[in-house]
Length: 108
Image (cartoon, rainbow, N blue to C red; front, side, top):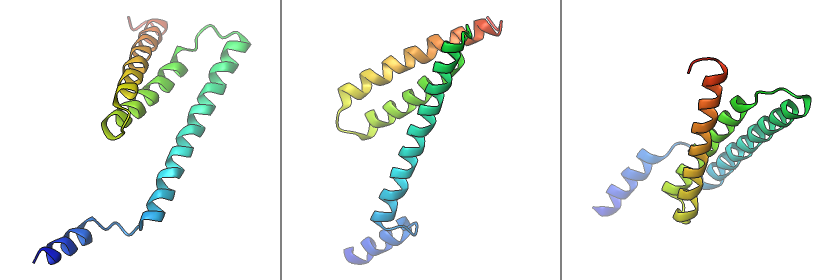
């Protein structure tokens, strides 16, 4: 009886991917996330080099992404203290850069 319940549960959870394909898919998402983070960092550096006095919007995007990533790692990973502290740190940077962006666009 338990075997039938287990088979039924596995069939319900089956999304057409085996473990290897699922790992490849997760790795591709992670690499694309790193790519986006790198592009945003390059844009931020270029703005600073060129002399654009405002770069908080790029920092806001980067810290928002980093906050979500570190919070997810806190919930799912093993190293809870480090990930929680990083999530709090990146969230504070996100709030500061959001405030600077709002001030720049005269929302505040």
